[in-house]
Length: 255
Image (cartoon, rainbow, N blue to C red):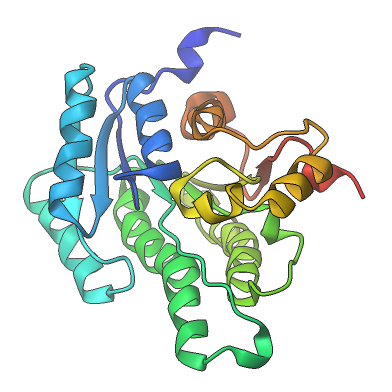
């Protein structure tokens, strides 16, 4: 198999929630494979700082600030890209939040906020991207799930529901858009060393649980997801659609 199958030169990738954390790692991986990358977030200053750092490494980087929970803002963002003649070849629906509270104490507004950002945004942004990919007859959509797409833990019910929904949304996208040349797949990261997980990393009991529950006996690093996203974005996965690949150190494979 030629390494050229993984080359993304000439393609443009939009990665939501990519000014830091896993999204930044996805963006850097795609850029390293040759793609032009569009960073997304709500803080223009943070976006520009991330873009500047990537440009300093020789990457072609644009920024697009919008709230993934605001449908009007999403539509406007894609119209802006249209006006600039920018075609999104690869979409990575990464933006997400976590909210920890027992179900009995959970407010409906907090439930909806997590679902909107983690699941509904993937539908709306995916729809807008696919409306433009379909006439071209090609496109890659990569939704970011979690080990919680498959396994539940106490106090994170809305996150678990959203990430479980990502799996079936991905399958629905693959079912409806496959004949249009669009592939939809998902990645399910395990417990990763990110700012969102800082409190968990610093909790000795939780840290021990993660290491004990994971066959590789450690947390994952964001950069360890780069190969998976490149694979799903490239021609190397040209007949793969509707799947979720768990990059979790083996966590979902054991009791």
